[in-house]
Length: 530
Image 1 (cartoon, rainbow, N blue to C red):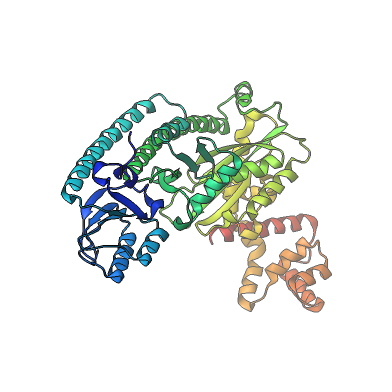
Image 2: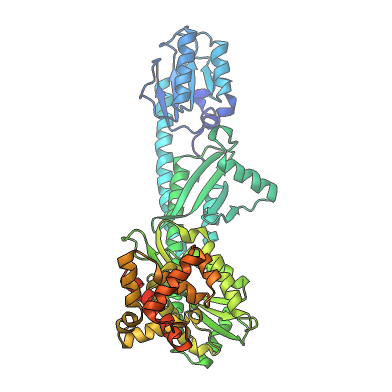
C-alpha cells in the first residue's frame, strides 16, 4: 500500500520544477487531501484541513499584515501548506510571515515562474481520487483477510502483528489491567519513552499518534495505539485501526464465551459438590486439576450475602470480591473455590494446614474481609458473612453449606450486635431456632418475663436489661452496676424488684437457666418482628 500523498512527493512533479520551499521545511511530510485555489484573506469555514493552497497573492498583494493573518488562520485550520506564485501580484514575502511559518512547521512554497493552477489541480486531484480508491480497495481487502484469519488464529497477538506489518508503525496495545504489548517489541528504555509519549500533550509529542479503544459488550477492554515519526497518520490508518479493533472485539468475545462456558460447567460441578452429589473418589480425582495436593485435613463453607442499594441491580459484580477472598484466605492457609448463585456467593475453603488452628485462621480472614472498604461501598445495602461447621470428609461439605445458610438466617433474625460469623458460635440461637420451628416460644417468654416487661413499660424502668446484665456477670453486683451505669444502691433496689417479680430463687441453677433461655428467646422474637 502506498503512503499517503505528501507535499514532499508533490514537489517532485513536473509542474513544481520552478518551485522553491522558503519556509516550514519540517512540515513537508504532511499529507495532502485536496488542492485548492484560494485568494481570500478570511478562511472562515471554506477550508477543512489537509488542503494544499495555490495562490497568486491577489487577496493581500504586498500587505504583510494581511499575509501574516492569513497564515495564522491556515495553521489554525490544519491546512497542509501554501504555494504562492511570485511576479504578478507578489514580489517577496515578509520575514515575519516566514518566521511564523517556520515556527509552526507550515510549508511556504513559491513559484518563481508562472504555472497553470488548473493543470496542477487537475493532475493532483486525479491522483488523489485514484489514491483514495486504492485505499478503499486496500481497506476492504485488509478487512476480508482479517476476518478469514479470525477463524484460525488462537492468539490476539497475531491480529496486532498483522496490523503493525500493514501500517509499518510502532504499535502499542494496553489492556484494562495495564498489560502492555509492543509490536515490534521495544527495549525497556524505548518502551518507557513510547508510553510517556502516549500520555503527553499533543504539542509535546515527537511522533504522530492514533488510538482506538477495543470494546467488548459495551465495556472497554483495551486500547490500540499507533505511533509513527516518518509520516502523518490519517483517516486511512484510523479506518484500519477501527477494523482491527472490531476484529479483536470479535476474537475476545469468542474467548469470553468459551471461558464463560467453562466457568458454567465448573460452577455446576462445584454446586453439585456443595449439595453432596459427588463421592470422595470423584472429589479427589477432580482436585488435581486445581494443582491441589491431597490430603486436606478438612473444609468449611463460607457464604456471603450482598443486597444492592439499587433495587434494579439484582446481582452484584463479584469479580473483585472473588479476588479478595482468594488472596485473603490463601494467605491464611486455605484453598478457595467460589460458587455464585444470585445474591449468594459461597466459597468452599479447603484447609491445607493443621486442623487445630483452622478457626483462628478463618476468623483472621473474615475480620480482614469485613474491613475492606469495597465491602462498605454505598452500592451495597447489606453484607453478611456466615461460616458453616467444619467437616473432615470432603464429601460432607453439604453439611457445612447448609449450616452456613442457617447461620445467615439466624443473623437476619438478630440485631447486628448479636451477629456471629461461625455456626459453631451460635449455640443458644441454634437451639431457639429449632424450638421456634416446632413450638411456640410465647408461652415460655410470657411466663418468666412478662411481669418484668409490663413493669418496665408502666414505670419506664430498665429491669429487663438489668436482669440480662446481672445474669451475664454471674451475679456480680459491682460488675453489673458498672455495666448498667448505676450506683450500688440503685442496683440493690432493682434486684429487690426482680426478686419480687421473679421470686427470690431466680438465681438458682435450673430456674436461672430457663430465665436465660427466655431472655435470648425474647431477643430473637424482637428481631424477628422488627
